[in-house]
Image 1: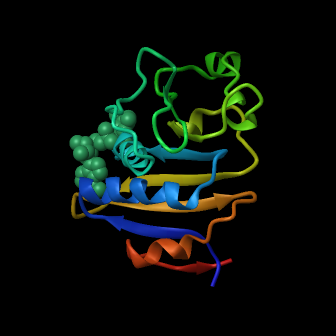
Image 2: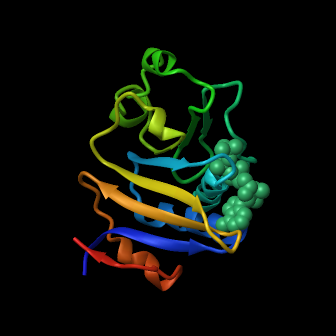
Length: 167
Ligand SMILES: Nc1ncnc2c1ncn2[C@@H]1O[C@H](COP(=O)(O)OP(=O)(O)OP(=O)(O)O)[C@@H](O)[C@H]1O
Ligand SMILES: [Mg+2]
């Protein structure tokens, strides 16, 4: 069964990190992850997990004063972008395509918080939307957009998928 959208329950912060940590196993250099979710939904926590999965030891904090935090010590570069404080016109000016066209930037994994503010998007990406669950944990919805060679079912052995939807 090839899944292109899954819901995963994340009961606590550890589970959010664990999901992030698993992703580099499946995502090749040049992958983009667009993160959505309300304030405090767990976006940065997930990116910290991705950093751990890449073997990055430097602490990952949200890029507040810089636009993009780049971590190059891991198995792939990690580019962490947070659009929370930016207006759409400012976002257009910074040419974020660099972080998915890979002409001037070494291919790695790009993770963008508040990606719903992007005026344009890459053609292929993993969309992760985090929402609050009733039990104070979170639910992650993962959706593959475009061409990504990643069967989301592969996550099932480590983090149970709530509602497998067939493609
Ligand atoms: N699955 C989870 N269950 C409960 N708490 C969680 C879970 N995942 C993360 N948290 C906690 O939620 C809080 C906010 O997390 P985080 O900073 O990652 O959110 P964020 O979406 O990046 O927030 P912001 O919108 O400010 O960027 C942290 O205290 C974190 O430990
Ligand atoms: Mg954040």
